[in-house]
Length: 202
Image (tube, rainbow, N blue to C red; front, side):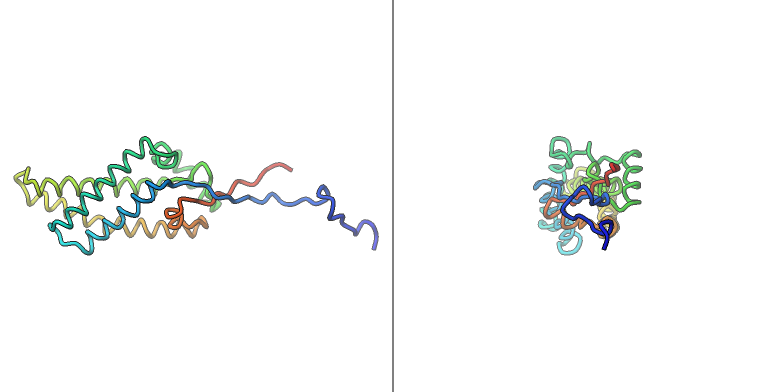
């Protein structure tokens, strides 16, 4: 065996490793975001599937969910980094970046919060919940004469949740698979795994 066939493994300078992306855990969702998310989800499921329309329990759950959404909206103005609207409000630029990240199945540190489609889904859900709260209150208080119209609007908003909620769940599962990121778990632990871009240095 010649000296050329011998590799000096003790000398790091003689071994050149490829630029492998490094993964690390980053805290994204604070406790208020996580608690409001799962409590609102539980309230929606309860009122859609278990409580009786017009019952006191139905109203109590509905107003609780509405109050939580209002708190979450306020937290979007003054809360932690990834909870704020400024970090995830859907814009064309953010959508373009998101599509770029999707092409390489990467979660970029600059885009850890809600991605643009998820942000649009969350805003839609919040809008529906607020609409349900307003129409529900107006029906209970009998402030408007046309109760049938309010009931119809309330019903349409409630029925829209049968579409929005499954879409939200399916999208979370699909994105978890595609980005190799357990999004459901991250909404429990508050943490996401970030994969940095490979270094271009030689």
